[in-house]
Length: 335
Length: 274
Image 1 (tube, rainbow over the protein chains, first blue to last red):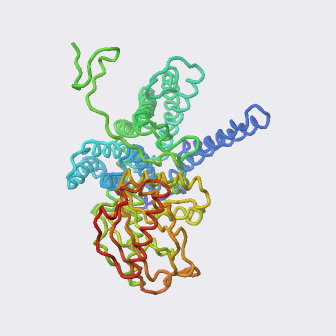
Image 2 (cartoon, rainbow over the protein chains, first blue to last red):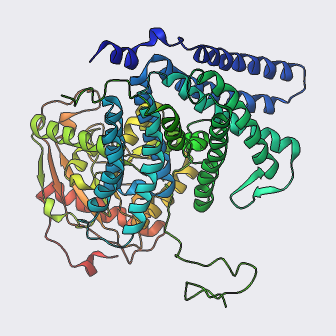
Image 3 (spheres, helix red, strand yellow):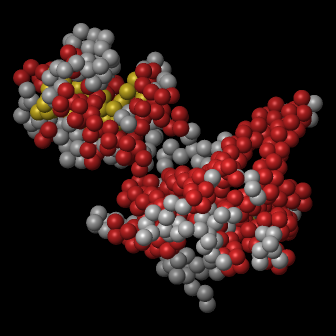
C-alpha cells in the first residue's frame, strides 16, 4: 500500500485541509450549541412548556449522535467512512427486514449481508468493477438460494423484497463508500449530507409557514405543495452556493452544473422520503425503528439519502471524470 | 370501456382507472417492532433475526460440547421427541443447568423455536442479564410475584404456542429444589396446553443438582442423565382450573415414573387424553 493510499484511508492529520470541511464542522458544532442555548432560554423564560422542552431535547440529542456518527468517520479517514457505510447499510436493512417480515427468511438475509460485506470489500480495495458486478451477482444468489427449499409459494415476494432491501440500503449507500476513494471525499460527502438534511428542514419550515394544499395526502399527510417547492428552491440555491466553494477550480464550478446538482439532490431527496413513506403506509406502521428517540429508526432519518447518492456520484463523475481515478486501484487484489 | 385486470374487481366509480394488477402481499412485520431493545428482550412477542440465529448457533454448540465433555451428558429416549417443533418440554428442576441440558437434547435446527420459560425477577431484571437470556438462550420471562401479569403472560404464551412453532422448556415446580427432592407441580402448566393438541414431553433430570447445587458458581464435573418420556396430549381436558390441575397431576406422575424405572411404553392417545 502506497503512502498516499494509506494517507487517504487513515490520514486524519489532514482532515481540515479543505476549508469547506473545516467551516462545515464549525458551523454544525455552532448550530448545536446555539440550539441548545435557545431551548434552555425558551424554557427558563416560560415561552415553552416542560413537555416541549423535553421533546426538543430528545430530538437534539439524537441529532448530536447522528452528526457525530457522520462526521467522525469522515474526519478520521476513508477506511472509516467505508466501514461506517457498511454499518449503516446493515442497520437500515435490518429495520427494513423487520418491518416487512423479510427477517424470517434467513437465506435471503444472509445473501444481503454477504452482498453488503462484498461492497465494502470492493470499496476498501478500490475495485470499481467488482462493486458494479455485485448487484447482478446478489440477484443471482438470491434467486438460487431459496430454490432448494422447494417452496415456490411466496418466491417472488421474498426475492423482490430482498433485492429491494439490498439495492436501497446496501448498493445505494455503498456509493458513499465508493466516493471515499476520491481524495476530495470529505467536502463531497459533507455537501451531500448537509444538502439532503437541509432539504428536509426547508420542506418542514416552508410547509409550516405557508401551509396550503397537501402534496401526497395518502402517502405523507404532513407534506404540502408549498413545502416541496420551497425545499426545491432553497436547497438548489444552497447547494449551488456551497458547491461553488467545494468545486472551485474544477469543471463543476459552473452555475448551470451546480443548479442541476442542487435540483437533483432536492428532488431525489424528497422522492426518497416519499419512497420510505410509501413503504411505511403500505405496512401500516408509523416508524421503521426506535434507535433514534424523537425520530424513529435510522431509515426515518436517512430515508432522503437513499435515492440521492448514486445519481449524484455519476453526475460528478460525468463532469469531474471518474472519482478516485488518480488513486491506486485494487489495493489488495492488484498485481 | 375500462375493465379491471383482476377478475374479481369491477370497474367503475371515481377510482375506475386504478386497476388492481396484483393481490396484496402477505407482509407481516415483526411482532415486537417498535419496542426499544430492553423492552424487546422482555417481550413475550419477541422474534429473532439473523444475528440472534447465528449467535445462538455458536452458543448451543458451545453448551453441548461443554456438557458432553465436562458432565458426560447422556440423553435417553431422544427418539420420543415429536417430529414437529411445537411442544412443551418439562422436567424436575434442580439447578440452573436444567434448561441448558433439556435444550441440548433438541435439534440445532430448532434453536430459534426453543424458549425456556424463565423467572423474570431473576433472568430479566437487569439489562445485561436480560440481553444474555433473550439473545443467546431465547428465554421468555414469567413474572412470579405479579399475579395479574402472570395470568396474562400465560395467555400470551399459550397463543404464541398455538400461532407458530415454539418449544417451551418449563419447570412446573416453579422454583429450583434446594435439597434435590422434587416439589409438587403447579397447575399453571395446564393453562398452556389444556384443550389443544400441543403435546407435553415429560423428562427427568438426574445429576444436575450434584453438578450445580444452589451455592455453586461454576458447574462441577458430575455425570448428568436426561431421560425423555413419551409425549402426552390433553385435547379433551377443559381449559379451566380443574383441567389444569389434572394435567399437572398427570405430568407430575409421569416424571415420577421416569425417575423410578425409566420411560413407560407409549399409551393409546385416547387413554392419555383427559
